[in-house]
Image 1 (cartoon, rainbow, N blue to C red):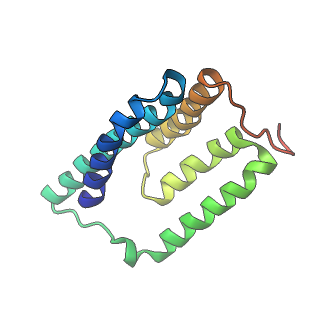
Image 2 (image 1 turned 30 degrees about the vertical axis):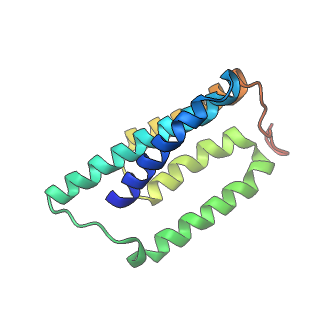
Image 3 (image 1 turned 90 degrees about the horizontal axis):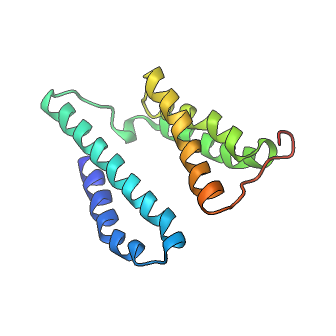
Length: 140
C-alpha cells in the first residue's frame, strides 16, 4: 500500500503542472482529479503507516480473491446499470457498496462518500462544465 500510494502521489504531482497549463475550463477536471488523487493517496499512506506502527496485519490482496472478484463484478454491474437507472442514482448505490467491500465499515464514512462523490461529480460536470450524464431508461 505504501509503494502504491507513493507512486500515485509522485505521478499526480508530476502531471499537475501540465494540467494547470490547460485553458481555464478544460483544466478544471484534470486539476481537481489530480488534487483528489494526491489527497486520497496521502490519506492511504498515513493510514498504512499507522497500521505498520501498531503492527496491525492486513489481509493481502492475493489472499482475498473473493473480495477482488466481487468488487470487479460490482464494477461491471455498475457500468451496465447506468444505462437503466441513470448515472447519479446508480452511483449513490454503488459507491458505498464498493467502499464496504474494500473494507470501509464506518457508516459515517460510507454516508459521506455516498454524498460527496456524486455531489462533486455533479458540481464539476453539470454546473461548471454544463455536461449531462445519462438519466436512464427506467429511472430518469
